Amino acid sequence: MTSYAYVPAKLVKHVRKPNSPVAVLVYKALTTRFFPSLPGHFCMLWVPGYEAIPLSIAYQEGAHYYFIVKKRGPTTTKLVEDPPRYVGLIGPAGSPIPAPSSGGKILLLGGGVGIAPLIYFATTIASYVESVTLVYGVRSSNELVELDQIFNVNRFKNVELIIVVEEVCERAVFKGTLIDYITVKIGDRLEEYDRVYASGPQTFLCKLYEVFNRAGLLDRLVLVLETYVRCGLGFCGKCTIPGTSKLLCRDGPALSAQLLKNWFAKICV
Amino acid sequence: MNLNIDVAGIKLEHPVMNASGILGSTYNDIAVLARAGFAAFVTKSFTREKREGYGTPIAVPISETLSLLNAVGLENPGLEGLAELLDSCKIFGKPIIVSIAGSSPEEFVEIAVVAEEHGATAVELNLSCPHVRGRGLEIGASPSAVREIVGIVSSSINIPVIVKLGLVDRLVEVASAALEAGARALTLINSVKAMKIDIYAAKPILGNRVGGLSGKAIHPIAVRAVYEVYRELKPDIIGVGGVFSWEDAIELIMAGARAVQIGTAIIYYGPEIVREIVEGMKRFLEQQGFRSIEEIVGYAVS
Image (cartoon, rainbow over all chains, first blue to last red; front, side, top):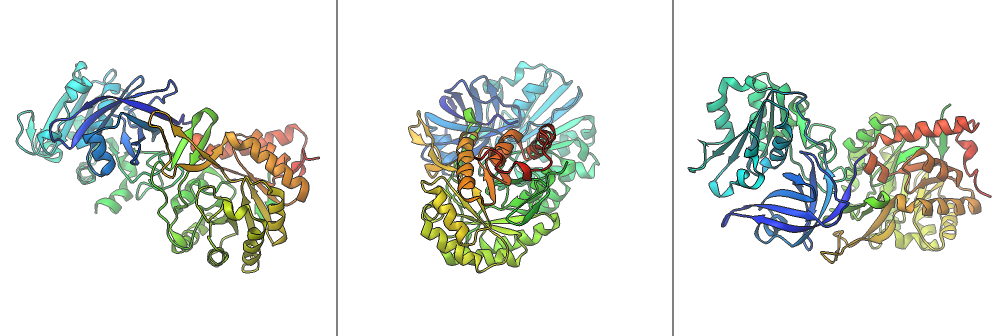
């Protein structure tokens, strides 16, 4: 059973670099009947006077929900530039990211705001896996969210954060795209990772699928997908994942790459 | 024991179908319902032209009562999409009922004709949508409007015409008008016009502000509506409203329904809930010494 709820919530934190198209928002539930979430869950965040948009939950601590938002349309622009004091959260939507069954080395690849569910995931699995390598790629430094400061990801000794930026940036460990990083830095060592989870722009996920397909490692790859979402509750049918019979807001957003052969053929080729 | 039953002349392997608006828009939606084991499928309401629907949020869960408030706005791909949907869904080999939400008698007829041409088992005229002006509840509250639309559709097609009515004051009178005009069955009831306000934002939450309430909260209302119409008119009835368990389904059948539709329970429990409901109904009939569903239709009505 899904414990769907509508949760009125109040803004408690807004972190944004000057002129950045990205912001971190923390909203606190104003009811004790708020919904619990697991990594991979998202919710419909309603901005009064605007629309409701699907947003990954980047972290949850009790009544506090963390989000990372990038400007795309009017609603996200409002959220990034001038987030409202009160919003409504409808959720939890989707299914949790399938966790690795036991220890092992885990690679997480997050492109842009796609990093959101992977932060939450990293903090959940860190306690029982051998190591988590969290590679965070962004186009430019002003899109960079300070994961260490906001989410305190370095509190886990076995979580390594690697920042990859396409433009020159002093904070970056590597200059280039996430795909460049995999090609140059990981290369043949891809199979050292027991499980790889990726979330980010579709073009990135497509390229990654190709890389893993070529390496014969699709069974180790999980992709966190995006679709258009309308109801968020599994009844309107708008979020069907192309090439599959799955609904993003019920079965997704994370699917094993092995199930995505037809998705790849439809979306990437 | 089997749960075979027929309603409006449609043979069903068991009495549970989905309610219109829940996963009935695309081939994939119907595939999900088929996998879960529904006995028949009801499509989303179709209009002649494609409709985009309302702005989001289009649905708000009211979790305290396992209910849902929605105002989707009759979003659908229009006539062209209907033909495509029906052609692709023949493969499932189960009855498919096309819900229609016209704004004029002619529009209802046009869609019903296309539905029949493309192999629909029946049509369900949505005369009770609670949130789109000129389509639905306004028609369904007027016996003369109901008589006109049901009459012209019934004389234009050969497949059964089912009429879906909502919560209106003169329900028995409207139901009677629909049956006299040729309806083979009634679906009772649609969601109930309602609103939810966020007290901090101080605004109604739905994009359309007003929507339809479905789920547990309206179950007793549905039971009452089915009971009253069955007692007065004894028609074939498909009961709908807050069916979450086999007990809820049996209750509607004892009030006079021959089949039930489930909607909000699919959202809270997933489509697989249908199996639990069907198995529970079987057990109940066996334990209570009944031999068929037929035996308990209207069993509580006196």
